[in-house]
Length: 112
Image (cartoon, rainbow, N blue to C red):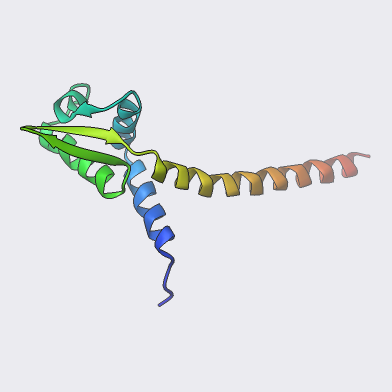
């Protein structure tokens, strides 16, 4: 079995967490600033327990931090893992841009 770098495992958990539309919506909500769990749950048509499970996935991926304040749990967005995912995606954007440029050159040569 081939061992993968720890960074790959981190990216796997980040992309897995971002794969669900509810979790992406929660990230968007937290981009506006910290919020407690019940505030985050309000716009979603699901139980508080279901939202808490989604938040747990985001927390395990390192995308959010959850701090207890008495009986309330306050969530904060951590952009560092998003930056790592963006960096990975950027490499492939550059790859595809280069491929499209080469295709454009090829088509121009054929047209002439």
